Length: 524
Image (cartoon, rainbow, N blue to C red):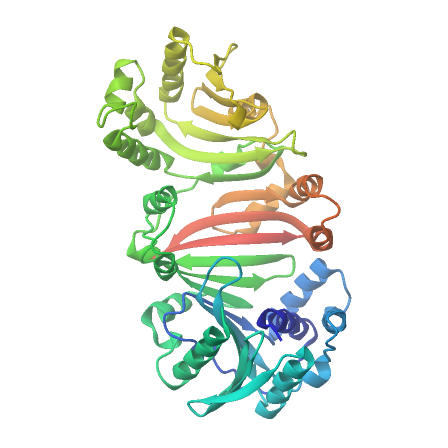
């Protein structure tokens, strides 16, 4: 009886509950966080038996995604069929429904690669005896040897081979999994200790973060970013760390909570973060996003891009380029050649990225930067002038009405990297057509994202939150369908549900001291 198998089963049970109103009759609604060990960096809580508007919206969204008139019966059928496929029949009404409570949780004490994470699933139980019957039936059907142990007055079963530990702690069924039998037993005992003493629910960082969770959510995900970084030995990509800090985020101190909120025609994921006590970023780059090419299947835009570039340039100038440019000489040397990087960075406003293509061979995209005045054109023109005076293999100066150049190499593949500029805009793209479309998309002649009905729906779905990211659901699915072979059974199964997605919309804002973001999945 592996925890992951039961996790799949009980997660499906949650879908049954929200679509068909199944589950136990209890209403104690005990909080799973009260038995989660303190310091757990990732914790997920879910409402297994929503009611009222939450249930109505969950039913509507589930029906659109699954395409079934009665999702409850459908999920029960699939759940029981999966048990038959494994040779371990599972009967929902007899085994799970009699004890299933209203709330469930999942925590990880440690996240590692190669499926070696340690954590436990916690499900509210309304009938301890029926829950124990379920645990022992699952162990017996697995064929694994198991032994009953006791810790702190709490009995639990421990599998000899698979190593899962399972038992009833207070109002909860607890299924613990570790890297080893000893590891899973330790996790279970940590839950016992938390139930009798300090738990995650007692930590200020958690309570402050979870209090910002959105009302009407079906599930909330809490992440202590700093603890995850500590667990990795402080290993975080330096570029990623700098990008976060430039956005006002100190990842070593930050916590975040994401809430999943179903609606009749959409599913929203609302995120809030304290950013490690840093100032939440502000700005609105929706004008740039809406001006990106209309044939893009995805695009993202951010404001205040110039500040990030300036900090990156300052750092590069300070450190130099080993064997090429001495420290403190990069900006000075280029300025002597007519390329003023500081003036260019000062002129930058917003930055956006888009991707186009229907097949692997047609894939392309570009980074588009908006600038004040003519500094962007002047900077690119200065580089072009320099390139004309020297010969660099694989680098060519573009002709025509735009100032720019292209770079070809085996590492880049079939298409060149192109840098091109015009008044108020610079594009750095993969392939010449994509790069040029990044410049011309604000001309009023070419179709832009803002001309698409799906984009209008995405903007409307975010309400007062400015849009900063968009993906066209059907276009993205067509591309994925062309890239992933039909022999991939998992993707073929997922396509049935992905077809229901009309768009993805991303927006960000500031709420008090918190940075907030919304991800909306629009449903057809």
